[in-house]
Image (cartoon, rainbow, N blue to C red; front, side, top):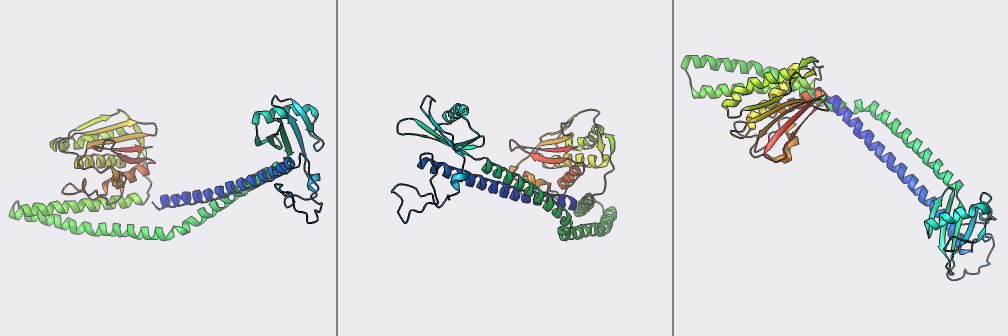
Length: 414
């Protein structure tokens, strides 16, 4: 159990770290992309405001205020902007016919390429977008013609890719490094839990062994007393409670052994025969109790596992079904080969079934208030042992009640 808890701690911790790192990675690159795009759009806006030219931002206006409605770009650009920015403009009509172009500020585009860029602008329509290494904007003029301004953005896009790959490498590296540290220090972090759990397990084991002797003595004494004085209802009640305590002690010992994670005695065996024999052992008693067993067991199924543990699993589930089945209702048992392994199920009608607490049925010492009270109530250990057996075989167990009237326990053994 401690190993499983440690694995879960490692998984959750690494997942949390990875989630935070990936969130930071995504945030960084999104902000970088937005910032770069905004910078390019500001360049396009400046070119649009100046009819496709770049003014001399080094020129001093001598305190002259900017004209009303005109945006002042001097805070965003400088006198080097004219030499750093590569762009070209194209004017065309609604039919895509070129009305004019300015290719002086770009060397990579020739007059032969203009038609292709007009087609790109027409397909996109008004607004800003990327195409290849260019950020462009299409706007409609007062005379109904269109002007497309293309700004060369190879340097900016290359910077985006550099940051993207660098941050991705850093993110993966950090996740791997932190994962290694989590794995290395997880054992140390789990030591208090392991120590507490070990003390609890040791207490259960010691208490169980210490109780065995007095329970045996009490049971023997009651049997001797019954031989001397004859049948008495008080003796019968005392013996019943003594047997109940013996079952509890045996269950605690079994549960403690399951927690020790000792290797199972796995070998190939006929699981169909094992389950059928276990069901047959309950058949007569179940019929007398008004719960006839309806078995549907696939023949000649073999399984590599602990035969004793599998028989115990079947016994727990059948006994549980008999204990809580509605009066006069049958119990269905199935065993078949599934996609994920061997599937064993028991189904029975159940009174006062609380479907919201089905997952809790496998918790130790858990008993539902309605369905698990009174004389039929157990100790809440059997299903916990069943889950331990399934997990020890790499499988799982679950409880389902689609209609709220019948409950099905499904055990999968891989």
